[in-house]
Amino acid sequence: MAAENIDSEVRSWGVEGHAIEIEYAVAALEEVCANAVDGLFRFRHGGMEVGGVLFGTADGERIRILTYRPLDCEHALGPRFVLSERDRAALKELLYAPQREPELRGLEPVGWYHSHTRSGVELCPNDLEIYDSYFPQPWQVALVVRPDNYGPARAGFFFREEDGTVHAQRAYEEFTSLARRHGLLAQLGAEAQPPEEPPAPAPPEPQPRMASVPPAPSPVAAPNSTATRHEGSLCPNCGALSVHRSHRKGTTEHLLAVVGARMRRCHSCNVRFARLFFSNVYMDDARRALRRLALLLIMLVGAGLVILVMLWFMRKQAAIGPSDCLIEPARALTSLPV
Image (cartoon, rainbow, N blue to C red; front, side, top):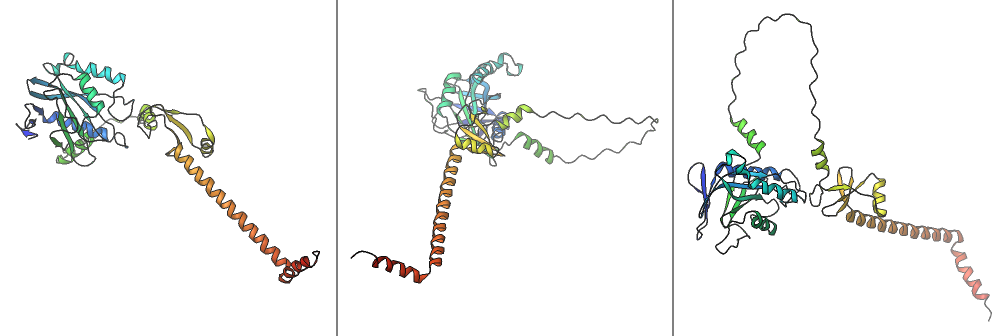
């Protein structure tokens, strides 16, 4: 059975037929799932996947997860949880957090977690590579969280079998979490509290008359240029933050530039597209649309020429008259030599 209650603060996860038993603090796992839901809403095309390290204790086949630390992934390779060189260096530093943070003294990395926003509760080849490279101990585990926009988040643990293999296709047992976004939780908590009665106003004290001073203007927060730049530089194909300006190439791109389009190219997936007003136009789609438009223009021009020839012929026949149409061929026949 999965997620049996031990007490109000700790739950247990286990699989029938396997000796491993994972105990986890409910508050820590709820925070992990809430972070996964936050990442789902960070990028509207499938969300941003997040991850981090699980800290606790290990006693043989009994793993106890007490807290966690998130990894600040820069997502240089897209919205999935794919680690760049900087991310790998940060993960190595995070593994030694118990030596620096007093709150983690006596704990050790017992595994790691990450979210899947485009697939199920499973371990893909990239996940297995991270699992084997940074969490190689046979007792270290992996947690995969599948957040949902409206329903509960699904989660499951993965562990190494006795022969060292991992059942990566799906989790043996899944459990759910009702954790929502952090902002939504705070809002719901504020709505659940009864409104406090305002204190009785104190009687006003006499104040000495002073010269009126105009109020100081309130400081205006500067816009977050980095967030704005990143929001506008996301690749619509892979979601990477590596979109840059590009020179116009070919007739299609020059025609799009006439109507105000700006060419962009993603350095991660090498996709070229144009920003036209508030939408993105892929070059392949633009070329197909222009070919169809050219074919339609050719058909319209051809139909117009046919109509003009027909009108010219009808006008000429009306000017000659029907009797002339019969006499002229007869004269031509009689003038032929016998």
